[in-house]
Image (cartoon, rainbow, N blue to C red; front, side):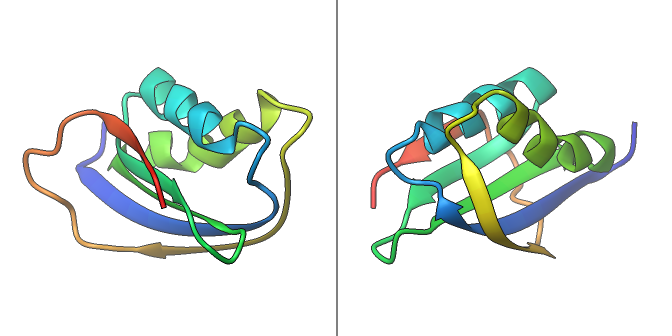
Length: 94
């Protein structure tokens, strides 16, 4: 496995009110990732996840394949610094 990496995503589309955050948590835990996900006031969702690059590459496909209600219209992704000693994956409020 590769060294830990961290990515930050912002999703737009039908991503609130459809279980997106809890599906993201499930997918992250399934892939052994840490991080967080939260809804934003503008209707988008923000997500940061950390772990091996191979697992990060699988996060969005795993998330979208577990729900027919989620529809991502737009997505941005960028690398961000690794958070040392982070544990678990959390669903945050606004």
